[in-house]
Length: 269
Image 1 (spheres, rainbow, N blue to C red):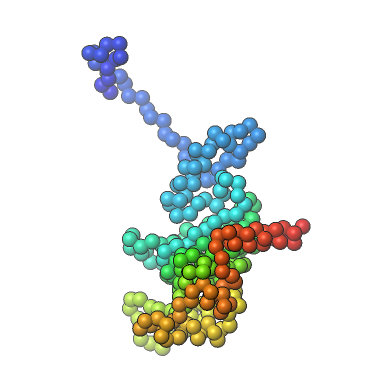
Image 2: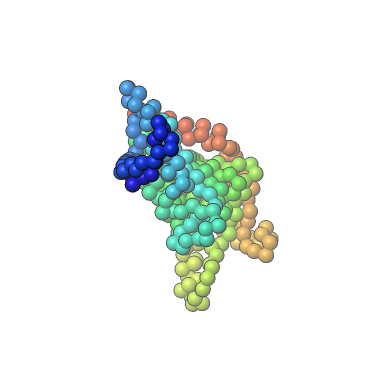
C-alpha cells in the first residue's frame, strides 16, 4: 500500500494500492533498420542505448553500427589482457572481447572494411598473436594505425592488417619475449621460449617488408634501451626498416581503406 494525498483535498490522506511496474523489454542484439515509414528515427534512442551498452561492457562500439557506415573501427589500447586478469587500475583490452567481434565483422555483410587503431604497451604474447592471426585471416580489407605506441606484441597486430600506418611521433618497441613469475630452470623451458619467439618473428617478417635478420638484430640490440635489450623505433624509423608501410594519420588511413574496399569490389565484380 502507498500513502498519498489528493490534490483536491490537500489535508486528506488515503491509501492507494501499488501497481505492478512493467519491466523494460530486453534490447535486441541487432539494431532495427530504418524503414520507409520512418520508424528507424523512433528507434534512435534505443540504438544509442545499444551503442552505450556495448561501449561500457566491451570498450568497443557494436559491429553493426547504426550510423550506416560500411567501415568498422576497432580500438586496441592499454595492455592486451590474456589468460590472467590484470588489476583493475590497468587499462586493458581483453582478447576474449576482440576475437568474437572479429568473427562478427567477418560475417556482417554491411561492413566492408576494418580500421584498427592501436595505442598499446603490449601484453600477453599468445593473446596478442591470436588477435593478429584473426586479423590476418579476415577476408575484408583491413588497415592499422599506430598512435602513441604499438609496443611489444602490438607489433604483430599492427602488421597483420593489409596496410599499416604510424603517426610521425608514435613509437614501436621491439624486444625479446620476457617472462614474469616462476621460471623452471630446465633446457625445455628455454626451448619453449625460443619457439614462441620464432613464432612472433616469422609472423612479423611474413606480413611486413622487414627481413628476419634485421628484425632479430633490432630485437637483441643493446644500448637503445636503458639496461635492457631491444630497440625503440619512432614513426619514420619503422617505415624505413619496412616494418610499417607509411607515415600518416586518420585521414590517410581512411583514404587507404576506402581504396582497398573499391579495389576488392572491382575484383569481385
